[in-house]
Image (cartoon, rainbow, N blue to C red; front, side):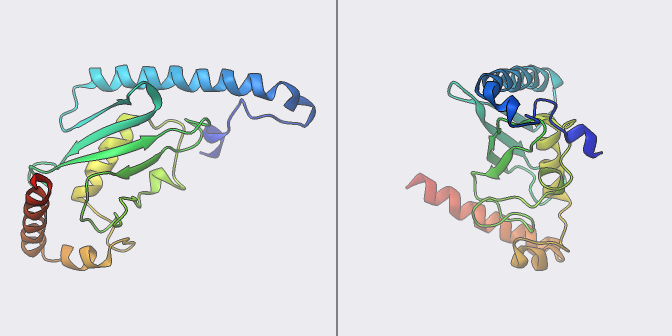
Length: 179
């Protein structure tokens, strides 16, 4: 599994660093090409409830949206996320966080997400679509044994109370955003 995360463009020696600047520009170009391909693939996928597009003209910063899946506490809720792609992408995971406040056992107050595929289980085989679908799935199936939000993890055990809390919380947020 580790070999798929080895960056073939990595500079192996000090002697090779002389052309590293030109190589970094070329690597950034290949990352850009990959991101363009992922954008087209995501748009063509037809997956419901997920989307993402580059922010302005910056191909390395995207804004994504995820709809809560039907039949879950998050049904009818929509979340906005930021995705920032490093120059080492896809060999290095992007930084993904919620922009819309998200009350969830595996999301902290700053929107940081505790999801193994964004950390130690990252693979260069993953793409934006995989990331968004995984986060959408995480909403419905949190890992309450490794919470970032312990209050949400405790409340998760009572789904009726959890759903009620979400609706009250997001109802107040909607009112606050109107003023």
